[in-house]
Structure formats: C-alpha cells, structure tokens
Length: 101
Image (cartoon, rainbow, N blue to C red; front, side):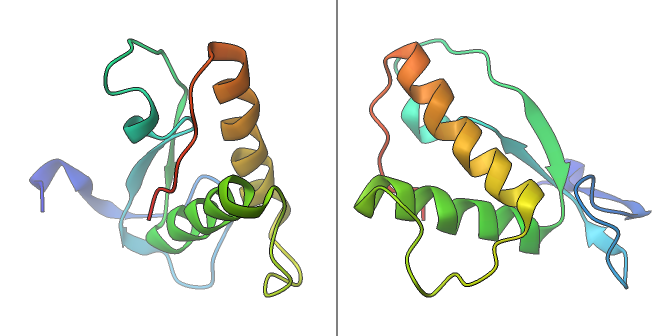
C-alpha cells in the first residue's frame, strides 16, 4: 500500500460517517482501467474505502446489465451519481466500459 494513501483521520468527501476513516482513497470518476491506452482527463474525488467500493459495484452493474441489480435496494445518492458520471463520461470520450472489480 502506497504511503501517500494515508492521511490524518479525515472525513469522506461524499458523506459524514459516524467514524472518520484513517484511509482515504482517490477515485477517478472514469475508472483508470478504461483509459490505459488513451489519455483521458478525469475528475478525482477523495472517498473512504466503503464509498469507493460501493461506487465500483454500481459501475460494474451498469456495465454487466445496464442498470443496478435488485440486490442494491437503496443506493446512496452521491455514490450513484458518481457511478452514472463514469458511464456518461465513457460514452462522451468513446471509451469501452468493462468491469472494475
């Protein structure tokens, strides 16, 4: 694990959780694996590991079945927005989305 991923105890940029995280991850709105061979500028948000994982689960549902699966009953709205943005930006930039997890 890269030392630059560690920061002081801080809050997720999406939600105020009951317990702040010791680890904040940088999430590229368009997943890096989609633009390895093509230079793409994508926004980056700093999120806690739980939000980061949830966003990727939703992105993978959009890639696999075109919508969220029924197992996701009440997706956190800010996470869902970022998952939708990934798909929209991929279309705009002519990228081919694929699974991220």
